[in-house]
Image (cartoon, rainbow, N blue to C red; front, side, top):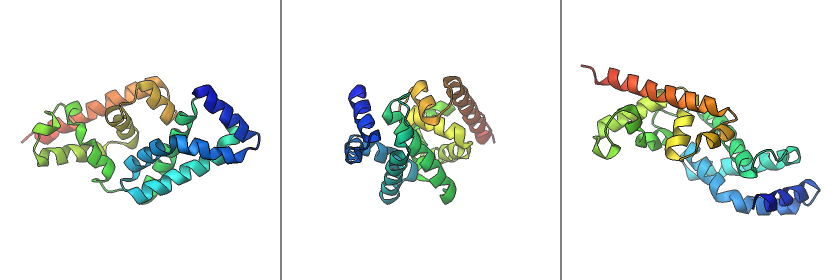
Amino acid sequence: MKEEEYGLIRKIQQGKRELYRDLIERHRSRVYAVALKITGNPADAEDLAQDAFIRAYQALPGFRFQSSFSTWLYRITVNLGLDWKRRRRCSPLSPEAEALQTLPAASGLPEPSLLDKEVRENVRTMVWKLPEKYRLVLTYYYLNDYSYDKIADVLGIKKKAVETRLYRARKMLQSKGKRGMEP
């Protein structure tokens, strides 16, 4: 599949631009899913996904075949999403923070199904207050089930940086959780 896709990309790079639709069709649903997780609403996700495909098309002549096209495309989508979020200045209870309710176990708290609404809300707020580089790694690892290698590819960082950020994010959550539980 990868070689077939690389062949398609080479044809597009050689001028058969109409073939780009095939790449869009192959990756549309995954790019949209990533965009939806970032934006939290279908209209913005559709716009973000479209922007990602446009940006990828513009950058396709420089695609160097060093990673899979999907990883390259998802990195573009995430980067555009980060720009979108910076412009929008999301509230602490954005859809991303809402989705992160699955993270309480990582903070040393009981499983989410056992937590009452107030505690879940506190955990979401704690996660949202983490620096973005830690919040992203947590999101990819716990919500998307990405491996360290995949997270490193998507974020454009080294695997060791992923491990370090995940470790630090967990420690920050544990520390905030303990402070929040003190009388």
